[in-house]
Length: 229
Image 1 (cartoon, rainbow, N blue to C red):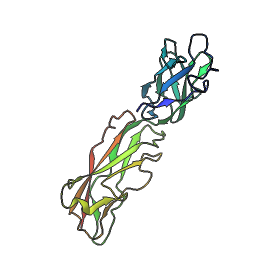
Image 2 (cartoon, rainbow, N blue to C red):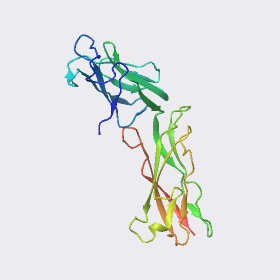
Image 3 (tube, rainbow, N blue to C red):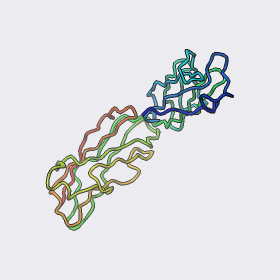
Image 4 (cartoon, rainbow, N blue to C red):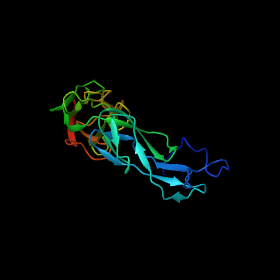
């Protein structure tokens, strides 16, 4: 379903007291991206259209602007670029009409994903593994907070009889956590035995990081071996 951004300048289409700005335009319709996130250096194409009193499109030039230094936007095309971590606001304009802000979270640029080498050993009688360490790496001094790390049990397979005997601390075999400023998980991820069931001798946990665009960060797909003794 398409998400639309409300207006500051018009109450509702069809109201008799709405006046246009001289060209039949009474409202702006801004398409809201599915994810209001950008990495530093990434771009996104924004779009909007002008509407007349009947709700039909009007051929009118849409402008774009931002009051923030964390993001830039081409005033003519609506092409936005992340500049610095933080919050970046962008709005569409047409004459005296101004849309509400599209508010983006600007994430620091992640260069690669690293996982701790070696296997994680879970001793007999211990219910949870040590935290499964992974870290996003980027430019020195840049905050990498707010990225998503995706942990997935890939072995044993979901259909294997041993699979239900292990779970992440969230109770599932997939866990998505946000990163802290240093690129590590903001909350620890452990692989746990399920009480009353026999854990497999070994499990493989895949770790991925996806950019706001959906592209994988370099190094995604590495696995951590968890050995249950």
